[in-house]
Length: 220
Image 1 (cartoon, rainbow, N blue to C red):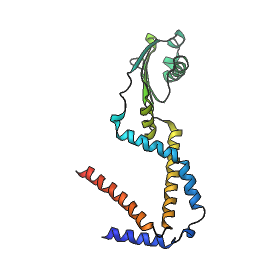
Image 2 (image 1 turned 45 degrees about the vertical axis):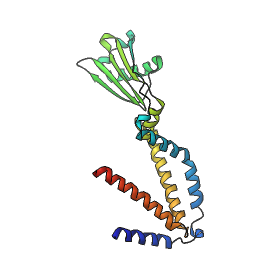
Image 3 (image 1 turned 90 degrees about the vertical axis):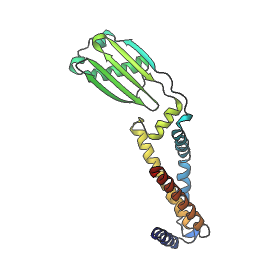
Image 4 (image 1 turned 30 degrees about the vertical axis):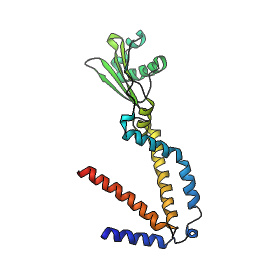
């Protein structure tokens, strides 16, 4: 078949440029070694959380919701910011709730309903969330919190969900380093004349198995 011929020619071309171990640049092996060790624990983390994501029945039942009702201090209930800039008032109140009542942070969406005079803070974080409703006219604050279980937190970190910009950068950088040690490992395999055919066969077998499974799942 055409694809088999192309792969055979590609392997021949790449192999012909590095037929012996000493043809591999000296920096390739240490780069492969150090990059793989750098990513060792990261790969273990993503491997294990990949298992828990794919087998959600292993997860314990979610913790029950925690509901609180607080009274706004007169300083916050009577401030003119509710009419001038309710989102600024909400931001200040959020910091007050964190300091005085231990409200957890996260990725927050704040909305002000002028008709109902209601401010909502929708705070999402890995493994849980908090929903805060504030009615200045009634001087009431209602908080609904879903506690964060350890496995739920780890699963959301695996997906980069509600985990912040720094964690997204970490995932991107980790992916680049893993790509680096994968490609350097491939380069090292090219230099192993006696074993490269069997090693390439394993790589092709793995790719083919993945493709067949995907085809079966998608069309059957």
